[in-house]
Length: 205
Image 1 (cartoon, rainbow, N blue to C red):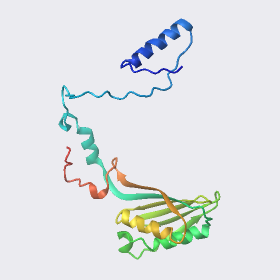
Image 2 (image 1 turned 60 degrees about the vertical axis):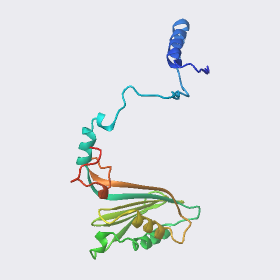
Image 3 (image 1 turned 135 degrees about the horizontal axis):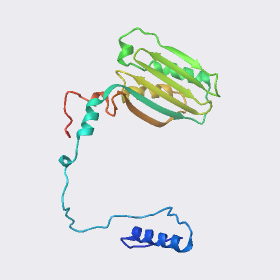
Image 4 (image 1 turned 180 degrees about the horizontal axis):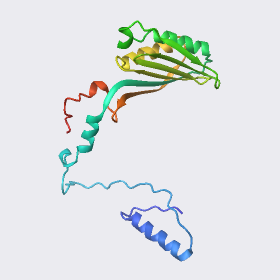
């Protein structure tokens, strides 16, 4: 049954009608979809009580703001290509991309990064590069899809990640199909480390 109506009270009328049908026929009705519900334009509308930000309780948001402790940045990139890939090629791309990383934890130490390979499950492989202050995980699905999970406590930003991704796909037809940044830490973190001055009160508090 399809109904079209311009009546303002159509939802209540529909409830009355469906109850009547159920009561008189014994059938069970189900409303699957209601399209519309747009607000009607009211010329020169004036609210009976305009609300400002001060009218809302900011206790919970402020507690969350003060509880968060961002520690680092995680960047997830997905790449795809129509051309064939191999474990050896993906490993070579990661080796090449690692030379572009200049996060502070690597610049300030002579730490050697070891890359571990896991290829005993499925058609692709997982490559894992870790150091004291960060890590890179590369997942190849055995076909044309590559996931890169890059994390560092210090020195990682969008520019650094872009340089890493450019170096990784250099010489290939890989293209970025997804790019996500996530601040990581504890205390319900939603803000980046450089944006969360815990000594200062947010302007909305």
